[in-house]
Image (tube, rainbow, N blue to C red; front, top):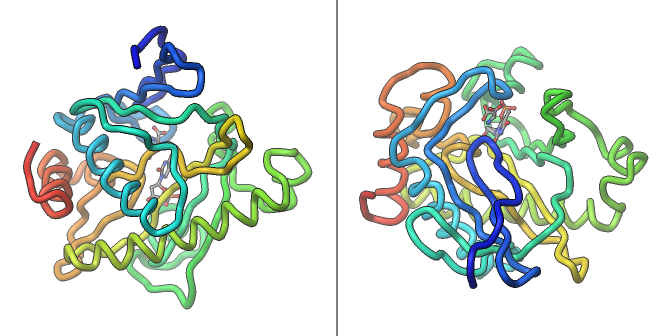
Length: 238
Ligand code: TMP
Ligand code: ASP
């Protein structure tokens, strides 16, 4: 399939149309932003790592019954995906308190919660992605009850599959963000990415941060952390 016009440029990816209207090509950038675009930078090698890590994890999820938009990795940075209309929600799954939940509830980072927490944010940069609940989502028509139930059950499944898999690589899955889309046949599938940009990964032994918090918080060793995730999950360097 041939790349045609650019449809969209986001903070970390570009999306291109193809000569087949049912498919798109996603191209991962090295650009990094935080705090709704206020902080900007580059993480060398990030585009290729996030592309490869996302596809690796999506293949694992597909095998475990979670449908995704993934079709085929084309090269280092580019992947062919099913064209979907994105449900305008960021679905956040949390196992351990960190980030905005720690701030909101006054819980120190690293505290294990009694059970998994699911949060929804309305995907809207102008509004700063505000947190919403199921009532807002249904009232606004962003998803139906059936779609939202499916999104929640897929999100818990993703958490279980990824947490178990990452444990083998001595990585603790603290929290992560998912996005879902709807194919032209109306199927809900996992879309976007699953990478150190969108997950908190801590070394299980040392609790060292191996994710974008190193960039957000100016902790240094940003590129090394992305490389380390790539090495632990795919056994190779980029
Ligand atoms: P938070 O603690 O800042 O709300 O982040 C929760 C998780 O969601 C964390 O793993 C990082 C991820 N995330 C994104 O992928 N995109 C975003 O815009 C934000 C704010 C968080
Ligand atoms: N990527 C998001 C932004 O620039 C936020 C984040 O990942 O912290 O706003």
